[in-house]
Image (cartoon, rainbow, N blue to C red; front, side, top):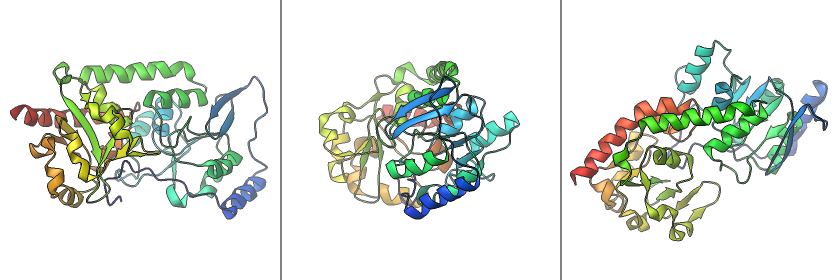
Length: 345
């Protein structure tokens, strides 16, 4: 369980040591070899930052790493045979609740869960015999990718680790699964849900989306980051400071955010609302007890949207076909309360 309010529970895969690579190679040998693809008309080709994935048309056995890809695959009618586990945010079934609900509704077998992060279970991935590994929203590096791509064609991020637009992820996953023609339908449906939930009167309300990494720290997400993009879709306006060159001086590579430090809390003085999240009540108390944090006007007047529930924190950090309807019914009332506090000032 996270002990701080870091940008997101973004576990990174363990660097592929020679022992891990050897394990993958030996297991693949026992299975009769890897899945190297021949160039041809029956393949899907996706270029990305770490290489090129050549996928056999209409892959059936899908493994999902990182965040968001499993949900999009399920929405496209392909329940993964395996996915990285997320114990923080999971319900009693061991799955994130929106995934559990969707798989049950479809009547499919739930994906096999395997350990990711620093203890990625390579052998478990090999045993799943995937046709494709989806990893467009992950932090895998070149060495890790090389191991994974020896198991099956692997689709990594287009440019930077842990940086992908929500609609870009949908398009990438849909293309990898041979369902590119369905991507726009999913995107349009999500846009329609946001449009229905948005409030025109919120357009003149500015916000910043912050995070902390322990006492004395303060980070700000750029509007392009998915959880900030979700707020934007609901009709609020990013505080201009979140798009300024001043903020970019504190850029944290691979997070779509800037760590400005609590000493620069006054940079957020013009934000009408502050969005953030906490890993638990104890962390919230620790962060909110800081005088400089309380000096942020929106925080001082209680115009704060700050979920603590692990499932809601996780879901509100991702825009995909399964999280959006799950989040909106829980998130919009919280925003309404924060707006009311702002308007009372």
